[in-house]
Length: 215
Image 1 (cartoon, rainbow, N blue to C red):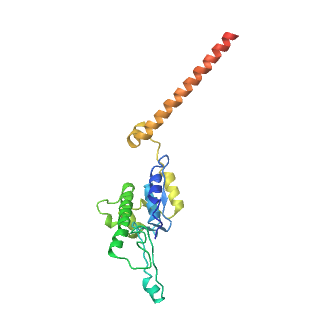
Image 2 (cartoon, rainbow, N blue to C red):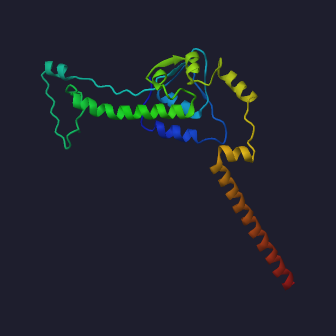
Image 3 (cartoon, helix red, strand yellow):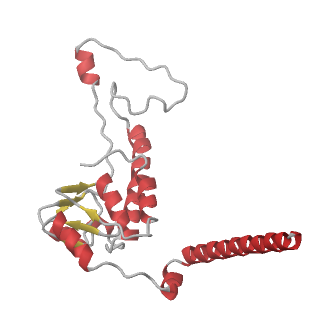
């Protein structure tokens, strides 16, 4: 189970930056592959006990129709500009060379997937084969492996949990420790706002002084 890989890492990276308010993911039944990629980016994945979670892997399917086409008397000819343009087409078997060519981006995406999950969820990054080799797990096992933050009986229970454990606003020290860049931006914006207000007040005073002199 899963979805198309294109765009998923980018969306997951964006989700991970949305820290103004806590973001939670709820695995309602099945949260696999691309869906889990996005859920993991929140760092807070909750699921009911019967949910299936994981499928951290990449798949590319090739169907070889050459035998069927031969029986039908059909011959397919590819005219290409570029030696690899027709690589992986379904009218001929895959050669070892083409298999290796197609396998490389699959491996790269898989490595990226594992790394992004490990960056946000408390999994054992030293043993990714135990949780990130395409397996799917029920929520209890996923929780043990760090793929699930907690098990809840349903969405209402998760909402109740969130309401009882709302994160307190961070003070300046906590903000400086956790999000120094955000603190710097806030302080810079505050200085700009203060300067703008001061300039506006000065202009008002000058206008009032000029008006008083004319009167």
